[in-house]
Length: 145
Image: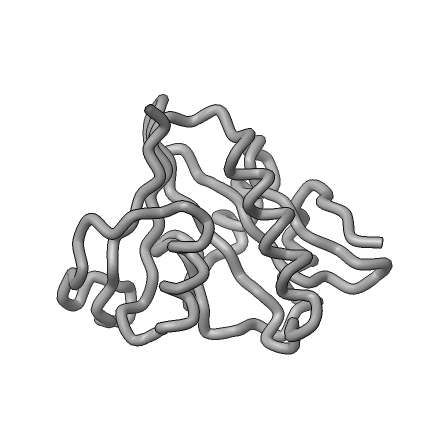
């Protein structure tokens, strides 16, 4: 049975990380202190099926009313992707933030397609060398009317 639980740093060690990341704050070189802050903040969750962690995701507040979305998905999701999608979509529909932004690697077409399916709209189609590792990123947002 798929369920959404509070994020714990050890959940990240249990997934085979896909190259997809939905926010610059969760990427290569994340520190233990940053992981601890994600655990302590109210909007970080893991999607679990039994004892298998399928994905870790959430939003990190930039300031009141504005947040950045992040997600790390297990690269072996395949049949479980729809389950994860539905859990993340439900979370985003209920998060109490007016503006949620997502940054996706410009070369990651599947990631861009997924973020758009979650209701995000492209605001900046190519932010050159914006990622931590110098990658080009696309900025998308979900704005509550």
